[in-house]
Length: 123
Image (cartoon, rainbow, N blue to C red; front, side, top):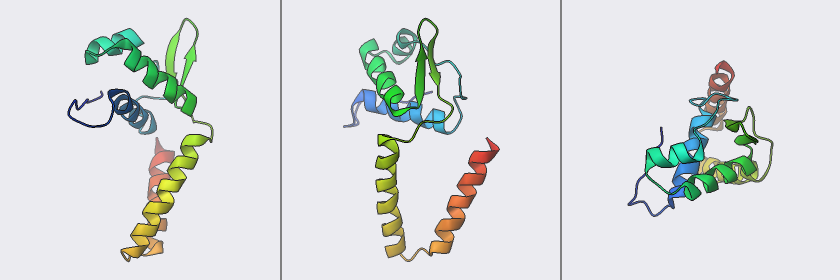
């Protein structure tokens, strides 16, 4: 499910956030699918439950997860636009600028985006 690298400079909760976000975005965790409880995931990964709670809370604030009182935490269908979207658009702009600098044609970039969109629609 999630691989942790204890030698990585990135904090453990950030690694968990990244791993869960990736699983939700790629539909490895389906929309509305229940995630493991905080205690269960903490036990599986052999880490403090507060670390899992922090990752879940931040992913919920970004719109990737939602919680139902007494039921658990679930993968969201589609995150609402917000801070994470703005952050990613800034990264996208930087990446596109660098790719254009490296002589990647804009037609190739457009085709790549269309392919990703088609893959996303097929999920």
